[in-house]
Length: 57
Image (tube, rainbow, N blue to C red; front, top):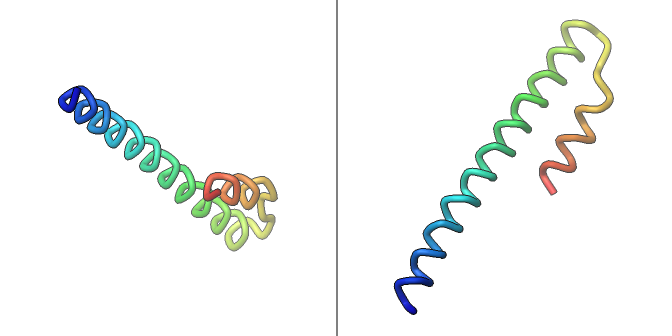
């Protein structure tokens, strides 16, 4: 039983770390896009702030 729980814990850590990596990458790309549209195009994208906020939560 102990080996089974150790295996489940290992896979959960692997799966959750991948999800966290994807969300942080997604947030970084959105923030960079927001900065680009705000300062280069002078027309900020409104949806990026909401998506980053929900991704962080």
